[in-house]
Length: 304
Image 1 (cartoon, rainbow, N blue to C red):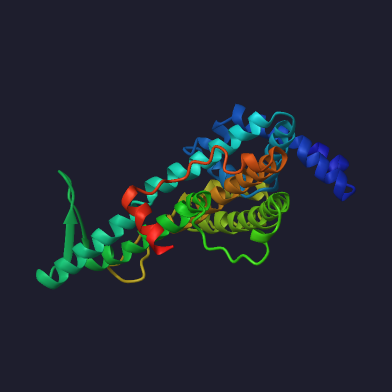
Image 2 (tube, rainbow, N blue to C red; image 1 turned 30 degrees about the vertical axis):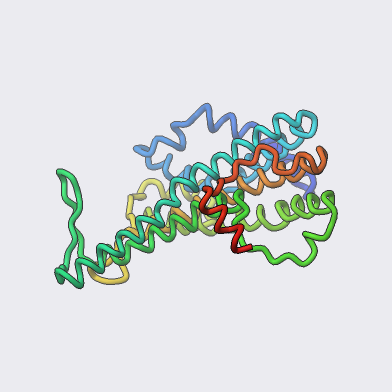
């Protein structure tokens, strides 16, 4: 932190120092993984918990975005590669976890059938090793499927253009203006929102995973002191006595949601910039959108 302290007399100096130190922090972290990934060491747990929501981590991510932007301005192929990779990540995760919607429907049918027909109080599943829980547990667990779809399929839906949009200006302006609006939206709305959700969700998650509880205001020195008494205390309290008891997973999904939104904001900013400089002919370039089957396409055509 010597450079930050030396240049920290004004906001611009502090900002520049943070960007420079981000390179050191990144390479130091990847060259010393045991300091934050060896969770058999309690200090590593506390370092991971601290740095995941720290200013240092923010500037590592911001500096990476800045570097990719500068490189991409001069080498558009690099920027297209980032867009393809990040959109591919969103599509892959979304296409996998979208099946949670089907599981949710099937499980609800089984629950209703078991309750109404067999008046069962418990449901067991498994091959070789059976898992048995009260019917209320399986009923409340349906919320997890819904959370999986919402948290992990949001960016997939964004890539596919499936979110509802209220359009008063966008559709009537020129291509260049639309791309500028998209770039501004990525920087002004998507990224700050993702950072705020991440900061809230990160410490909210860790407060339900370990004790003593940690705070966003805790310094690394205090966190390392707490490491001597830290222990896992994963939240297993349900809303009902026999209800779903893994609500810590919702906290994990909140963090995953914020991370995916931030990555998609980068991809959308880069795509908008590239479509701006390359012109209208590049709109939708390399975009991997799902295609309707013949029957679905005919139905959509009839509706329109």
